[in-house]
Image 1 (spheres, helix red, strand yellow):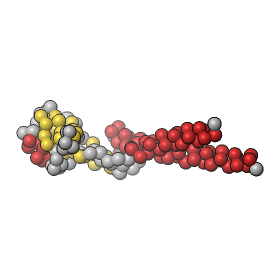
Image 2 (cartoon, helix red, strand yellow; image 1 turned 180 degrees about the horizontal axis):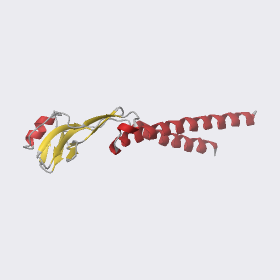
Image 3 (cartoon, helix red, strand yellow; image 1 turned 180 degrees about the vertical axis):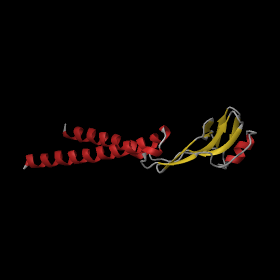
Length: 156
């Protein structure tokens, strides 16, 4: 029973740390399209340190991969090859005018309530969740250590 308890506790610890390992990953580069103006631009949503929000009327598209592992982007205007990660070539392939390599508006993910919009809370929430998961993992490890120490004392 003791080994099963430690095994289950280890699984719980790994599950609690999993979000910490996944939420901090940077977003992939892609493109954004404004359907109303029929314009195209490069777009990157950001990472754990920054967030780029899209202007109103823009929709983002990120690459997917075909059977050969080549990246492409599927949009309502068609499919473009993204193998060179060139936003400009992708936009031109879709026959849309290319504006810039980053259409997003920069926001730091540091906490500043007066300068945040609702879209800015998503990365902050991810950081808070990550910290909570790390704390849960540390507490779980401490409890496991105490249980093991008690078990050793009982056997003496």
